[in-house]
Image 1 (spheres, rainbow, N blue to C red):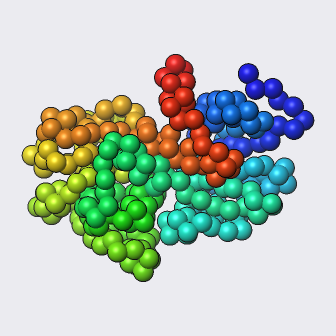
Image 2: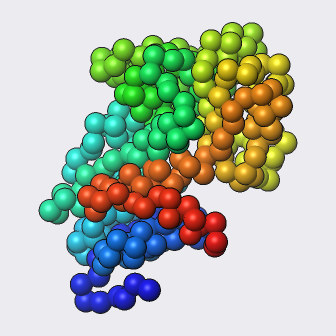
Length: 289
C-alpha cells in the first residue's frame, strides 16, 4: 500500500459530481505499481469555485489535475498555455504543472482513437459518422482528423448550441489536416443512412442511451447498419446500450466507452509522469473492484 510521506505529491480531479469517478482507483494503483510517490484525489468543484481551486492547486505546486464536467471549458481562463489539441478543441480535461506553468491538454480524443486501434480498426483515410457536437464529440472529431481519418460526417440536432464551436473546429482542422468534415441534421434519416453506407465507423458521442434512459437511441433501427461498419458508444453505463445491441444484431463489431476512459487516463498519466500507465494491470484491478 502507498505510504503517504512528506515527499508525496498531489494530483486529482476537479468537477461535480465526482464521487463516482474511477480515476482515483486507476491512478493510485498505477502510482503504487510503478513506485511513484504521488496520490490522486477527487475534489467536488463547480464552475463558480474553479478559479479559487486552481489558485490553490497552483500555490500547492501540484503535479497536475484532471477536469470533468462542468469545468472543461471554464478552465481555459486560468491556464498559461494550451496543447495544440486543446487549442483546437477549446476544452481541457488534463492540466500539467510544468515548472509553475499550467498547461492544458485534452486526452479524450487520444483515448477514443486508442480504443479504436485496440479493436483492430484502422481509420487512416476512412470515413466516420459522428453523432453529437458536445465536448466529447469535439475532442473525438479533432483527434480523428489529426490521426488522418479521411471524412467525418457529424450529425446533430438542428439548432445545436455547440454548432458555432464545431464550425470553428472545422475551419481550423481544414488548415492543419486533409480531413473533410461535413455537418448534417439528425432529423434527416436519408442523409444518415447514406453517410453510414460510406462509413467504416459510427460513434455515438452523446448521452442518448445512458442510464436511466436506456431505451433511447439516435439510430432509428438496425437496417441503417451494415456488417463492415464498426459501432462505438462512448457510454459505458449501461455496459451495452440499445445502439450496441442493434449493432450486434446487424453483425457489426461493437464496443463501449470503457476503454476510452482508461486510455484517456493513461495519456494524462504519461503527460504528468513521463511513464506509461500499466493499462493491462489496471483493467484487471478495476474488474476486482
